[in-house]
Image (cartoon, rainbow, N blue to C red; front, side, top):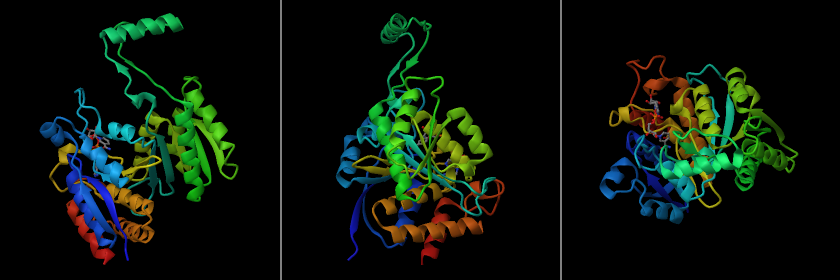
Amino acid sequence: MAVTHNITLIPGDGTGPEITEAVVRVVEATGVKIDWEVQNAGTDVYESEGNPLPPRVIDSIRNNKVAIKGPVTTPVGTGFRSVNVTLRQELDLYSCLRPCKYYTGARSLYPKVDLVIVRENTEDLYAGIEFEKGTQNALDVIDFISAKSGKNIRKDSGVSIKPISVFCTERIVRFAFDYARANGRKKVTSVHKANIMKFSDGLFLEVSREVATHYPDIEFEDRIIDNMCMQLVQKPELYDVLVLPNLYGDIVSDLAAGLIGGLGLAPGANIGDNYAVFEATHGSAPKYKGLNKVNPIAMMLSAIMMLNYINERDAAARLDKAIADIIKEGRSVTYDMKPTPSDPTAVGTSQVADEIIRRLG
Ligand code: NAD
């Protein structure tokens, strides 16, 4: 008898709920049995409950172990802490896994791209250790740093701290190598700026090199982040699995999404030792909220990663084929996958789901 999986479903805000609805429909059409536990989070929840990520959401994920999440808006310049960053830190989802694979028919200049970005998710400049310009704490930190380093920081500076530890680097690099091994990948590239930041990025490189010695079957190399960006634009087919500290991983994920035809096609997962939260790379695209316009495929591809994670491999493969077919055909796709964004033949979010469900039969 088929197992029923308990999965936390966070629709998100902005365009999140309409995308999520399309994703739930296609996943259910594969025949996999899922008991969705819907947990709202985000800006609307902030207004009604005073907290964009109430404890009930985290409790639900702790209980179910697996969640799929629509995007959530992070307003700029308010006290609102990013739901995404908090989730990753609370559940110790230390690996952000973002495969970027070209699907035939996608609007891309790079038909050979098949990259996997492994981004460290818990530290670096995302650790949330910041001191606001002009506050006593900022002035104290500036004085302390001047005393210890002999370097002057202007008093009118804001300060963000970039911690990179041996512990977190070791586990993310191991995750990258284990992923490479389990998925028939040949090479891991560690990306850094060790020539400038010797004690943070330098540590990342040194630990990467050490971990690599335990995986003699997988090729290892390193690249400096700026050079990596240029190489990805010029010859992305030379790269396979990339492992990066948090901030570079964030930026390179978007670059890689651009290589394969845009954010509408870039899936992702946040994975720790105990829990996994699947979500697309893109944000909540609030300007399109409620318009049934944006592309649900990135979140559908994230759902495929989730199906593989819960060992529903056949359903994952069938959904992947149905998606690959509609991309190849180019008819039932959203505006971002048409030759121009104003193409009148573009279909809406829910019509993409309808067509995929029709093909899943
Ligand atoms: P965004 O990814 O939401 O949108 C940028 C642009 O990309 C959109 O205007 C649209 O043109 C295009 N786009 C994005 N998703 C698309 C899709 N599915 N189909 C077609 N086109 C798509 O980025 P942003 O505007 O920088 O961020 C909006 C909000 O989302 C911010 O508050 C940001 O903090 C948040 N955000 C959330 C997540 C997350 O929840 N994981 C990730 C990134 C950004």
